[in-house]
Image (spheres, rainbow, N blue to C red):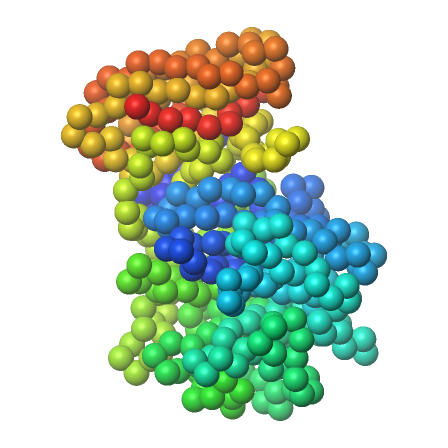
Amino acid sequence: MAAATSGTAQNPIIQTKYTADPAPMVYNDTVFLYTTHDEDDAEGFKMLDWLLYTSTDMVNWTDHGAVASLKSFDWVKRDNGAWAEQVIERNGKFYMYCPIHGNGIGVLVSDSPYGPFKDPLNKPLVWQKEHWDDIDPTVFIDDDGQAYMYWGNPNVYYVKLNEDMISYSGEIVKLADRPEHYQEGPWVYKRNGRYYMAFASTCCPEGIGYAMSDKATGPWSTKGYIMRPTERTRGNHPGIIDYKGSSYVFGLNYDLLHLETFDHKERRSVSVAKMHYNPDGTIQEVPYWQETKLEQIENFNPYRRVEAETMAWGYGLKAENHKNGGLYITDIDDNEYLCVRGVDFGKKGAKKFSVSAACVEKGGMIEIRLDSTEGPVIGSISILPTGGLDIYKQMSCRIKNAKGVHDLYFCFKGEKGNKLFNLDYWEFK
């Protein structure tokens, strides 16, 4: 069991799956984080679908599972290659731009940021068949309403998207002068009248470089690094947002894999750090992820139904799909735990805890603790057999001495060597 050291260092924000290529989007006061997905058994790149996570506090993230996959495109025959995507909203619809490695870039559309995403074209949006440069699309809409899509490795291309966001006008433009150190993974955006292109810098190792321009089409002037290349990680891929008064840069690393092995495998994880601008618009360099500390920006409300796949840390656990939709937490072993940070129990405090759980045979116990895995126990609940791992029942216990704001730990106990039970959702009252 790996300890959550989030009080002193920034760990990957998702631990129940391997995630990469973060594409954050702010919508309805929520961060929607779309990611690629490295399979658990990946040696090289093994990427089949695209995932979604949400947060309103930057430290506790809810898993919404896969929102699209290679199967979303009927014209795609490949069984691998679901590479770095980005989602953007326009006129109440959500557009997901997806590279299919070796098959160009497709686009999916949804009426909701949660999906389902459907293919309106039944063909690629762009596909330059003479090379394999067509990866890593990034899309933004300028103040005048003109939308642009940039992409490419090792060259940089762009097109002007039409207002329908699923077609473009004019030709594909290849930048004559790509930014210095540019490798792939562009992230283009506008802030305070300035245009930015962040990107994964030349491999290997990769950092996050960036360039600036006075125009959406360039020319681009390289300014330096947002995060310097370091031997601690081979790759990177930026996503940048402003949210609730602060700026954040997302990227990727192999820190979760390195808890198990330093043998290189393409099993990556997303991290995020606060980012600061200088008065002239340039960006202050961000230390490596583990040398940053991410502050929670609002307290967590436990007095509601909370999906079990909501957490700040849950290393060793897995989130899987119910047959009829939704997710649950499984692969729970003795001595593992789930942490939700900054939970506000209020002045009166919690009196009761209930959980929806499923169990086949022996079951186990959840010790509910505050502030650490060794912190005070405010309640414990026995998870009894329900008749099957897909048969969920409500179980509850009384809670004592849970007042104010605390990190919440669900510590799992049971027979060693057994998968103990599955969890669907929980609630305090």
